Image: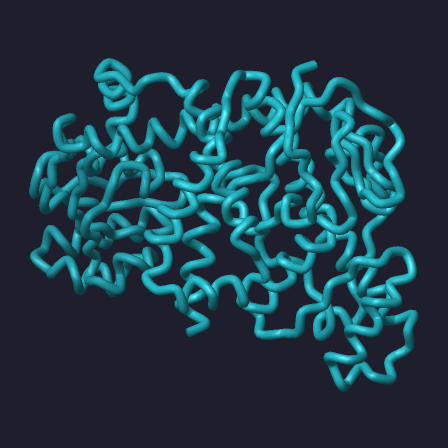
Length: 409
């Protein structure tokens, strides 16, 4: 059951992205005590933050099988200490200072990721609104119904997902809403993939769509000219290449195979030898050849020509590659835009400050977790500050944080 549920988590996680940004008429540099941040005058409540810290830790527990330890009460972390002692018997008598340090370190790692998600959510929504993008209640209801039906074959599986992740139907609805808005922002930046673009990519990336020429060769390498001359004389006298290679060659790779190398591609041998191998005709003994690493005898026994797939066979593959490139470039552009638009009006409580917050100053040093950390508290195993591939499913709407209206500046 756990494996199935985690598959559903991944499926929904792939469509979630980030939270929404809201454009307000003004912004304040003062963050109320009940909130962790203000974005253009819109609050991110402590309640919402704590909810998504819990959701993130639920995800960790599902992967590790450990307890759900949620550090949401800085700087004392009294609650976190109590959780550790209550849920992990071996730490029942561990000094509070030791556990507090672990809670502090986990909070620093986990909260920055959750805050990044929450803040960028406002940024994306605000930019989408300013760009004239709308997402109605009817849109939300339809998207939720479709996603639920496609992801969860039964109601029982859906309920199991909610229990496993700590999320609510409202969380999922909101994640779908944000993903839709973000994808619309992306689509406005992505150029059309035309036949000309596909052809241009194909022409400049020929090596991706086939295999280069390769050759089978017999090779003997020695460290001195006198030894290679002796090997050459033995071959000309009629001795087998394998026996001569075994006696004289210092090339361990070919010596072990009777002096034969198959499927050799250009560039795999040193320059002087490579030049001879890929210009020599079939079945003609070449050498001695002086190289940087010794002296060589070579004979090409088979030539396999280069093969290139026709454009018609790789058009779909190129479309996919171009789409990925365009999406990545569009996302980078959007991230830069939203940072410029909303970063100057994003203010955070000192305990929750991170790179997205206006005036943030990074800490001078980072201390590794104490020995208790490995057993008591762990940071999320995978997070992302960008929509694509995010795994921390955080959303302020569950905490009644996100304003229900938007205004143009």
